[in-house]
Amino acid sequence: MFEQIITMVFQTDFAFSIFRITAPILFAALAAVVAEKAGVVNIGLEGIMLICGLFGTLFSFWTQSWFIGVLGAIVVGILLALMIGFFALKLHTDIILAGIAVNTMSAGGTIFLLYLFTGERGNTASLTSSNILIPTIKIPGLHQIPILGDIFSGHAVLTYVAFLLVFLIWVLLYKTSIGLQIRAVGENAHAAESVGVSVIKIQYIALAISGILCGMGGAFMSMYYSQSWNTGLVAGRGFIALAAQAMGRGEPVGTMFSSLLFGFAQALRTKVSGVQGVSSNLISAMPYLVTIIGLVLYAASTMKKVKKIKNKDK
Image 1: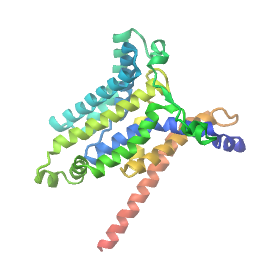
Image 2 (image 1 turned 135 degrees about the vertical axis):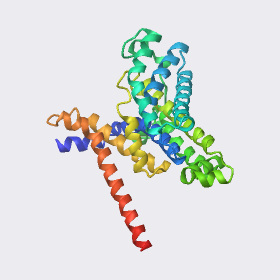
Image 3 (image 1 turned 90 degrees about the horizontal axis):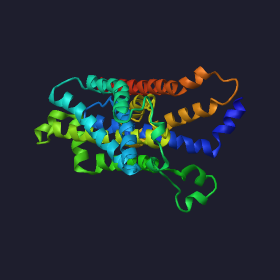
Image 4 (image 1 turned 90 degrees about the vertical axis):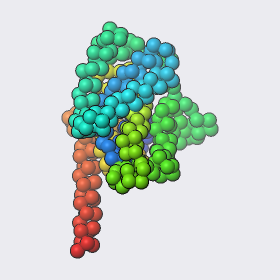
């Protein structure tokens, strides 16, 4: 059994699936990175992705264009993120509670909206057609290279966008004035305000960027990964993304590697589920066990650093 699992892990289709599975986690994790840098915690990633996934499918069905579907999901993501910002920054509601409210609302609200707009119950499988799904791309030249072509070519457009955004978010945060302001607000809001930075404006901008990324993640899930929307579409990926952001220490590159770790765990769960003699309960819990283990290691590392700082101060 162990040899069979090892053989599966070293196949090109397994490596291909890791990147496919990682993409939606990475979108949400980068959303968490940007929000966290501005000193706001967007815990509503799960709910935003679920709602955006629904509207991405609906917009693409209504217009028969996958591109407009993705744009529609992004717009909805921005509106939801700004709604969290409105309650937290304008009405001074606890932002954690605002995020939880979005997560709770998404569970039943999406079912109601789906029935209201289409008359369907629970999923959009009957609405799906090939022209409303996100297309895949074979990279010229690369797809002909043995092994590498099988792993890196043939992914959906948004898969490549997800990994490209790691670099773009890094550039935004560390090479632009708006990125400097985002980090300044997150590190010391009062100091940033004292030099003329509008703290609330920057936090709204960070949440809007977070909504854009969640919108793409939700669209990816419904318009490519599952090829339809259903109530269990996101399946905890928003919360896993929060763990990936923490394990990556809030940095885009570190968050990417953490997301790949979770993608590996989920891909392994899918592969191992077909192996006889392996407990299905253990398989289902695998990604969440990795999440817990990763957070424990992150907490241990953080505590170790804090102790070193305290010892230096003494």
